[in-house]
Amino acid sequence: MSPNLFDQWRQGVVDQVERRLDQCLPHSGHVPTVLHEAMHYAVKSPGKRIRSLIVCAAADLFGCDVERAVHSAVALELIHAYSLVHDDLPCMDDDDLRRGQPTVHVAFDEATAMLVGDALQPLAFNVLATQDTTISPETRLQQIQLLSEAAGSLGMVGGQAIDLAQVGLRMSQAELELMHSKKTGALFLASAEIGALCGLAYEESYQGSLRGCARDLGLGFQVIDDILDASSPSEVLGKSAGKDLRDNKPTYVTSFGLIRAQELARELAERTEENLLCLPRSGGYLREIAKLVFNRVY
Amino acid sequence: MSPNLFDQWRQGVVDQVERRLDQCLPHSGHVPTVLHEAMHYAVKSPGKRIRSLIVCAAADLFGCDVERAVHSAVALELIHAYSLVHDDLPCMDDDDLRRGQPTVHVAFDEATAMLVGDALQPLAFNVLATQDTTISPETRLQQIQLLSEAAGSLGMVGGQAIDLAQVGLRMSQAELELMHSKKTGALFLASAEIGALCGLAYEESYQGSLRGCARDLGLGFQVIDDILDASSPSEVLGKSAGKDLRDNKPTYVTSFGLIRAQELARELAERTEENLLCLPRSGGYLREIAKLVFNRVY
Image (cartoon, rainbow over all chains, first blue to last red; front, side):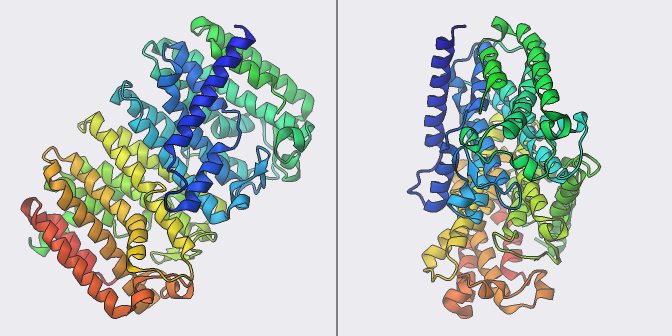
């Protein structure tokens, strides 16, 4: 695929997702106005929208266009946005900079940040329940099931709990992988499956490769995050660099060193490639997303 | 209805709901174990299960038995339980006692309490999506829509945001009502409608009375909470008494005095009675729940 074609598609996805995100939030003139203003602030921060890209790429593989998959992408972004707001709070990671901007509890206050997260989460399920009615009720329920499991205590939130409990401890590679497979991987996996379900051509025979691909992309994303955190300045990252080390959190780099972390990223990239080859059109846009993940600098 | 019959039904509902609540949570032996232990702690605390009673009473009015409505009740309890855990946190109401027991952040820690709430919320939507399959997919989606709206920034979380913004301010009766209609009323309303939707005999012609009833029950519950907070000792309440006054929060009692608050409770009870008479069997179990709400001492 030409880089131009992908860039065009990617920009189209990001534009549509951001427009719909804005539309699905109550206007900031609605009471309680500060809460709504803060919700807009939280979802508008200039992210990579990687989960949306995965949703729409998986949908596209099975015959569903961006227009029809965009609500599913929005649901994923809402869950991701809420998790960032809560993760940044003082009782969690206590971070004051996110994507180059003050975090929600810094720009507003702690109580508002808590409530922003609490309100973004049900909105995600609302969007899936009420989305594009050409997607069957059964499929929408399946999507809600996948997202609710990915967001729960056996998924993302469980990963965050393991993360907090590990401060100052040494973790084995298997333990780090378990943590990240929940903390980041669960939503990546849900993105791929929820997106694929939008497409009528999705069949169970593709599930293994799709899931493998999404899982390794999630893990790869995290390994590279750790590498960047250890080796890039804050200006490039748009967040506080070297923070994991200062917070005494085990990462791939602090646990196994930069060299081993880079090797692991390469291994994951290779395994992703194998899975991509088993998908329609050798993975289509998903292949380009894998390049983004494994080659990113911030 | 004889008090015995209602008590028997009520105990049956509470038992079934608590059994299902326990079943739908991951076992506390599952990783992350502390998080799962804290989730069990949060949902097991001995509440009145008033939302479950409303769900099952509304379902019963329209021909659905407790067995079939219990999942919907569980979903409401999960949302309610999460909201209590988050409301009690230091950055919110900062309360250390709830239903006579240490709050979750006291028994565990702040980060765990935050994550408990974050994980209980998606579980509620999971339960609705995957519940009793004799309830049609369309109905389950409608229930998810109702619950997600009730739990969101225009519902419960919005009410909490208004509450926090009003500390130290004087509120008119209309403003207090708006706050409570969101903070408590939204989930009461959702309980009634989600329950009614379980019953095949539910028709739109009943919607007005059912909604009116649920709204006034919610408001009545709050007015009486305010009255009890101002006039009962902590041992009876099972939570810190007089806290609203100390926190400088506007309540019906602090704003209009005990006498006017008691008058208002009576007015709401009368209006509830009018709506109950328009429902099948003059409101059935819902009528008994109204008595519980308006006559409760804790």
